[in-house]
Length: 133
Image 1 (cartoon, rainbow, N blue to C red):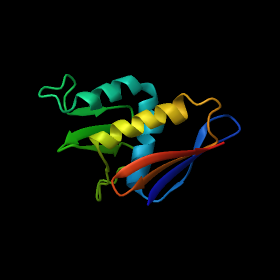
Image 2 (image 1 turned 90 degrees about the vertical axis):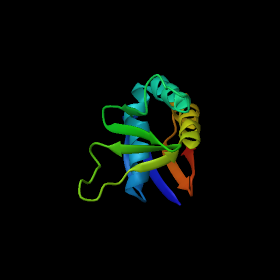
Image 3 (image 1 turned 180 degrees about the vertical axis):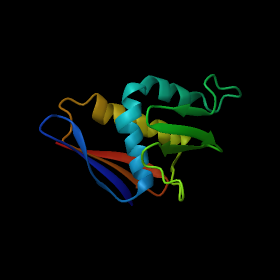
């Protein structure tokens, strides 16, 4: 099982708390950095990907990440984590991507109070979020 953890500090900001792999860190980085500023945009993009002519195409980019859709899989590259000699990408199915966006909205964005700890986990091809107060 892969994981990436963030812990809320005394200033109510989340700090990196460790991970088991670069790829899960890239996915979590996307959620923490780019998704919070374009949540509706990224979800709309993912929902229309299977349309014959998606309005926004098969790629998207944020401030730190680049997303590309191929064969029902979304590949996420992170500008600051990438290794040019040995590139690593987060890979997630379109279905799981939409699910993790919904879960992030529910458990993080709309949570009141905000969780003290966020752990994004990957078990095989399934992704989920655990939080604690």
